[in-house]
Every structure is written in C-alpha cells, then in structure tokens.
Image 1 (spheres, rainbow, N blue to C red):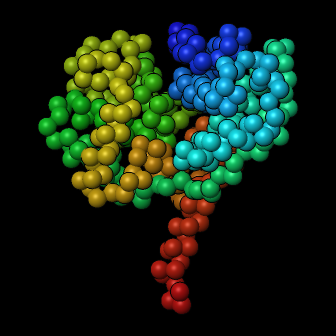
Image 2 (cartoon, helix red, strand yellow):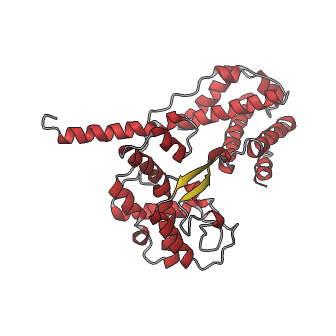
Image 3 (tube, helix red, strand yellow):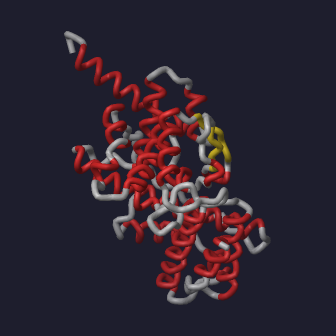
Amino acid sequence: MAARSSARKAKGIGAAPDLDRAANAWLVYLMTERQLAAHTVEAYRRDLTQFLGFLARHFKRKPDLKLLLTLSARDVRAFLAARRGQDVGSRSLSRSLSALRMFYRFLERRGLGKNDAIRAVQLPKLPHSVPKPLTAPKATALVDGADIAAPDAPEWILARDTAVLTLLYGSGLRISEALSLRLRDAPVKGRDMLRVTGKGAKTRVVPVLPITRQAIERYLALVPAKLGADDPLFIGARGKQLSPRIIQLRIERARAALGLPDTATPHALRHSFATHLLGAGADLRAIQELLGHASLSTTQGYTEVDRAHLLKTYEAAHPRA
C-alpha cells in the first residue's frame, strides 16, 4: 500500500507520460523489491521531482525519456549548481545525485535506454564529521528526564517515553526501529534479546538490559489500551503507533530543562551507546553487528570520537600538557 501511495505521488512531477510511468515503476521497485523504507523512497521521489522540475524550466518543456537519455554532464552539473544556489548542503546534493544514478540504472536495466553522463558527474565532497554522543551521566539524565519534560503528562505516557529512550540508549536502536516494534516483539518475561528490523529490511538481534526490560514492563502495566500481539508496542494518546516527533519534542524539552546541548537528540543516544561500548573495550566488529551497519567503515567513525575523548583526557591530566 505504501508503494502504491508513493507511486501515485509521482504522477504530479510534471513530466511526459512515458517518464511518469518510468518514475512510478522505479518507486514501486524501490519499495517492493529493494524494500527501502517509505521515508527513503519519499526522499528519492522528491529528488527526482526536483530534477525534472529543473529540466522543465531549463529546456522550457516537459521532460521525457528522450530528453533524459540525451542530457550532458553539464546539464546535471547545472541542476546541482541551481540547488546549491538555494542553500542546499553537500549531503543533500550527494543524496540527490545518488538517487538520479539509481534511476538511470533502473532505466538501463529495464531496457528503456542508457546515458553515461550521470556517471561523469562526481558526488559533492561531504564535510568530515564524527558522531556526537553524550557523556554517560548526560545520557542517563536524558533517559530519566521524561517527567522533567512533561510533568503533567499521564503516568503511562511518562513510562512509555522512558521505555523508548531506554531502548535507544540501552540497545542502540534507531528511533524508527524502536517505534516499529510490535507487542509480540516486546522483551518481557525474562527475555534478554530483541530481534530488530533495520534499514533495508535487514534483521539483527540485540541484547536488552534488565533495566530496559523493567521499563517496558512498567509501561505495559500502565498503558490503558488493550494491545494485541500485532499492535504497535508503543502507542500515542489516540491509540495509534507512536510518532517519532513526540519523542523528539520530549527530548527537546528535557534537554532545555537539563541544560543539555542541541546535539542531544534521539539518535545521539544511539551514538552514545556505541561510543560508551567502545570506550569500555568492546570489539568494533561486535558494535557493527549491534548497530546493524552494513559497512565497518561506518562504525569506525566511533573510533574518532573515542580518540578525541582520550586526547582531551590526556591534555587535562598530563602535568606537561
């Protein structure tokens, strides 16, 4: 159903019918065969729509497949330059170009034509950045700060938010992974492992701390709705699956009350999970498995965080620093 929804949205891209059909087919392919998350497919749809909108203005006509297959590298660079002029950052531009490359490969595999110009354009250089974890005391304060953020909220909602945040920090889950759990997945009654479905529909097994299990059990004991095995584990006030925005707002209020930096976000708890494990001597490969990273190079970013922490400690402690 999500695939059909994304496909319907593609019909408004202002392209010729043959290109509309190709765009719809690509989006359905991404959702069904590649099994990409709905929000990822939606981002790719926007990237393609922006590109085709630029071509319509650039060539003063609706783009069709023939136009796409005769574009030059200069045309693609002109699109990126136009987006850059709208203050779009390198990371977003890189994703847009990657999406366009995927679309062109799809066209080629479907026998609709080939254009190597898109491959001649280099991805924008991304600024080097490292994860921004919280210290252990700050991460703990954030997890325990649900009542600070919303002192007038019902007790079951405070218990719910604490359970979600405990999962993020205690097991290194992404917010989308935590909120996609069903009641049948709940690590209760002594279960100390949790099967999680992450990016690309890949599953992994992560450990669950006793304190996390207790937080989830407390929430389930207080939640007023009668949940079935296939219902979302975490629900909102109206009984629907909990929105990530609710947790984001809760964290925004908590960090303001606790004096935490703006980098204190739901994802920062996942970064903190990995960094604190690494600092305690955990194996990098094991952390990769726990986080569900496809590439070890992604996980290696945490070694830079740990090295920065060591250098800071060294400079503060060494008598000749």
